[in-house]
Length: 186
Image (cartoon, rainbow, N blue to C red; front, side, top):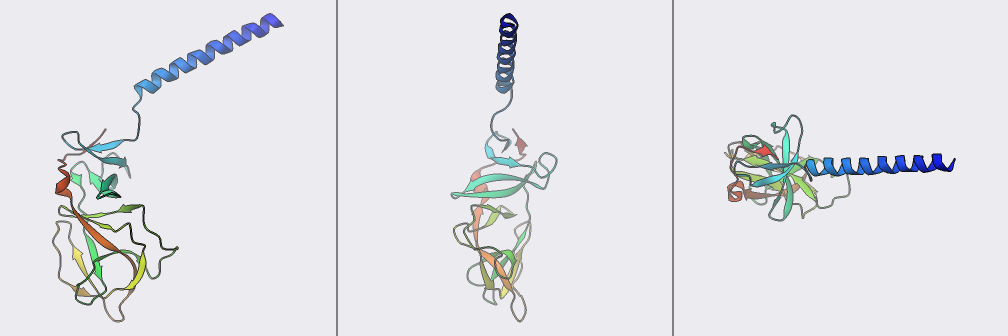
């Protein structure tokens, strides 16, 4: 019985050592860390978050923009230009520009965002100010920003003005990042 137990322990030890050695080899060969999106020169765009096949229109990269973590739509061609709407409490599109978050009052206790989604128009990134909680405001007017960056004229949103959940919009010029398409995953 003792001899059988010793033989079993040696076999078990051999198996454990073999699995550990195999795991170490596989771990060295496998890439470490999350997938990232890189530009043509190999510069990091951001961490890759797929929505479909690799680098299609619905994919995102998580970047740090002016100290904030922002999800930007990406594809092999670069940043995906999406267009968006800017909203204002004034009836003439003056004052603070806001981004739409939802209809009516916020559904949960308002709190600042930690990661935000963004819209790209031309080379300008528009994203909600993550330091300010979502708030319900009466919106008097709005402007469309086309995917190419063209801003439409001011439009009144009717009477009575709608109540929207909004966050002030921040802008950032993406050309300051110096990234050159095409983008790829590495």
